[in-house]
Image (cartoon, rainbow, N blue to C red; front, side, top):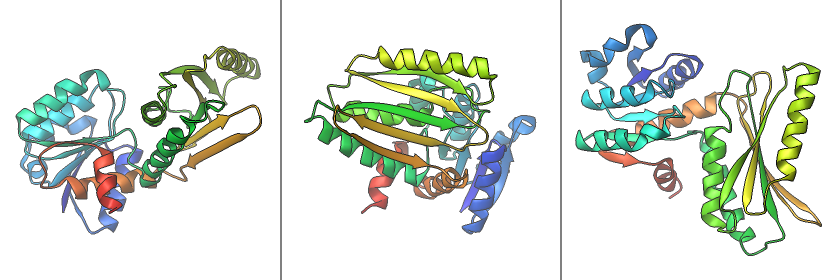
Length: 264
């Protein structure tokens, strides 16, 4: 198939490499310096576009790609305030969009496991959940989009958990004094979380591509599940698989729909 890439940072390069390894053709690469090319013939020839940019640019990129007649796979996060508007524009234009906070197949399997565990814990109120997410120091937003997706899954299955809370962020590259202050603030936040709230602690360390840990703690024991990404390749592979899946479709889709088909 023919693929267009929107956003040519580290993820864009990984997507290009994996798409080529899977026998696909890259017909257009759009980055900050050539955004006008979204309106070009090469881009319009794509069977799908994969978008990994920023919260401020993703909505317009999705709409422009849709108007060019190209289905979009979007991995950008942080544009939730514009999501309803963008999805309506995609529908009205007869386009296709699959947006997800994380395209890693492993992460999405992890989410399925987490939801199942939460459905069990809904019947055992002595266990309370906490979550920790670890990413590289270049990631400024927190909690991660993946952490929020996992939290939504837990709340959907265990109705005693009605909200999540940001327990703070700890920077490994901070000064010892700053880091201790961050740790103290996080510990205080965790101590004050009510039983119906899932606290999420964020850590930023080195070049960590992503680790998400969920713990269910009781007075007598603890159950822990974790997903640890080894590189960006898992995210890139999942995005390319999503592009393969969405070609020829019309409408708004979720990663859950794709996973359901993969697991049949």
